[in-house]
Image (tube, rainbow, N blue to C red; front, side, top):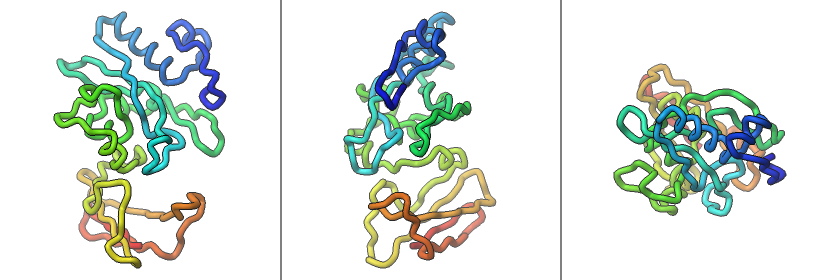
Amino acid sequence: GYFSSAFGDNTTHGVLKSGRAVCAGYCNLFVDLCTRMSVKAYKVSGKAKGLGFRVGQEQTLLNHAWVLVRCENKWQLIEPTWSAGSTLNADKQFHAHFESYWFFTPPSIFVHDHLPNCDQVQLLRLPLSTSEFMALPKFDLKYFLVDLECLSHRKATIVPKTTNSLKLEFRSLTHRDLQLIVTWYDEARSDVKLDGCVRVQKREQNEASSTS
């Protein structure tokens, strides 16, 4: 398995036989199925902000693979592995749940977590460098599912202007009745919540701010 580095046979035949795969196996099977249906698809190799990623620590990026597919007369991005489910740090067990959001994900969102070895495969007008990729915030998928946008900050590392206050502003383009629940954690100990220092204020129907 993934944690033992015993990845097994990730060819299409091997995946179908064992019912198990890492990202390479998911992509090999997906590309093979597309090819059999005369759909152009290619496996893309690169780095990802996956399990164990830490902001600002490039060495915690994972070697990863996903798919570039030609559909509706344009190239689009698909993440077969993450769309199948997720693995939690706590139990290191795979939890199967299909997530359609990782099919035809907009490139501007996909690049928050995925950096291909070939810049062109980012599908962006202005591809990001590794340093620009690392500077992007690492968001949970739920952030994009509710169309949240951070208005106040665009980078993963935030330096407060004052020593005793930090304010973040958010909005949702599609959810007007937005409820924001914020928890802050100690950077040195991710399991330690900083209780009693967060205030959430709703400004407009679709905007909210959090102050620490």
